Image (cartoon, rainbow over all chains, first blue to last red; front, side):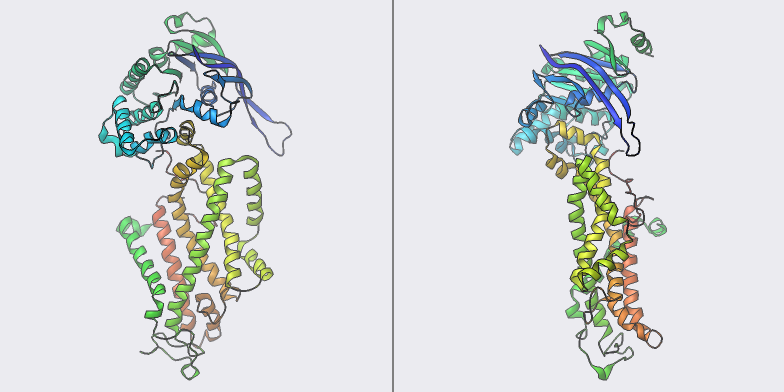
Amino acid sequence: MSLLIAKQISKTYTASSWFQSKKKEHSAITNVSFVVESGMCLGILGESGAGKSTLGKIALGLLPPDQGSISFQGEDLYRVNRHKRKQLRRDLQVVFQDCYSAVNPRMTVKQIIEEPLRNFRRLSVSDENRTVANLLETVGLTINDMNKLPNQLSGGQLQRVNIARAIALEPKLIVLDEPVSSLDLIIQKQILDHLKELKEKIGLSYLFISHDIAAVEVISDRIAILDKGEIVETLDTSNMYACTHPASQKIIRSSL
Amino acid sequence: MLMSRLLGKQLVISVLTTLLALITLAGIFAPFLAPHDPNLVDLSHKLNSPSLEFPLGTDQLGRCVLSRLLYGTRVTLSLTLLIVASCVAIALIIGSIAGYVGGLIDNILMRVCDTILSFPSFILAICLISIWGVGWQQMVFVLITIQSVYYTRFIRGLVTNLRQQNYILAAKVCGSSPFLIMIRHIIPNLLSPLVIVVTLEIGWVIMDISALSFIGLGVQSPTPEWGAMINEGKSFLLSHPRLLLAPGIMIFCVVALFNLLGETLGGKKGTTKSIRKSKKEPVEGLGGTQ
């Protein structure tokens, strides 16, 4: 079953000025289409500036595309009413690249993970504590970390907190916007293995956005290669070295 | 800066706040501390030198200078508190809306602010008071109108900066409404830069109140107020300079204490500029990223 379908989406940023009649246009992505199948992981691989983060924001429902449509579970993310959109949000979560800026520096780990729970579920205090404790355990942290502030945690631990927040509502799809790029290799491996495990355990689907071919290879079932705002090739991970487009060859051969 | 490096930040902050608390308490308990009624005219004691009965002497109408100073603390500090609190409240609402919503609303609000900011603030205050009339209520109203523009711009700058933080996006994805994002994420992260700026601005507000009262547009005689006291004493500058020096020193001390406190709280360079001096919004020192 297709969970997220992007059809022909385009996004152009315009820098307008009062004194210039000509607007400066910069097209971030053009005519991008992709499908994320339920229970699968689609990796979007691209260089810096290829439009990866724009694509992530559009897929999350945070940035309306200029053209095209994004449908999630059969509903168009940008055309549904507010109530329905909130319901869709519940099944669509995110983990950002920079784990430090992705959490409010003034909130404790518990408050961070509680936020989505409070928005969607009415839980008693003891239930809430238990849920947070379970989530922390699921992502490999301990209950002792519950009352720590973000600056008391390492990057890897904080990224686990972000993952815990993302899975708190038991979503169907998580957009992973370069979730391991700011971490060292050992932690990268741990987090990726963990994400893979979660995918199988809870039946999650991922849209994994990255420039790191190794990370994408570990976790993705299919890979779409994004070059200068366009998807040039989509193929299965198993035969990704059989790519034909010069841009994708360049990216795939660039692995260290 | 040098002081906090020599003595340690915590110590400097506690000393400064203690001194300010003492001055505030002196104002609050003025009726118990003041040896005389501040408005009691007694021409038989006019222009007395300091003595046991009148520790700071008396003025040209025989009123006790110390009592007037103590009551003046009350007037000045309560007006300052009123002005600053109103400004922060107005600025938090307008600045957050402009910064968070952005677009056309932001543009309209900011152009209105720019228009007000394009006049020198003190001249504008004098103009507005001359239109609305003289008195402390008008002065408070005018100062709130002008000051809140500076605060609004400052808060708008902070909010625009915070809005782009990933945790705001993450909160949106988590299903938090704009109102909840404001309460949970934006306002708590505004507070520390806001406290620093408010501390620095208090000094300016005290100066404004005193200056307007000095030129006779603010607090009116016989209400004891430091600026008004300097005004009354100015005719005795050469013969009895203590009439000017006493309120002058009080203004100097309180303003200096608040400024030192603000600078010490600010810590890093560049975060401690008054919002009046630099019309650009200082955005460093935001507790956003590491």
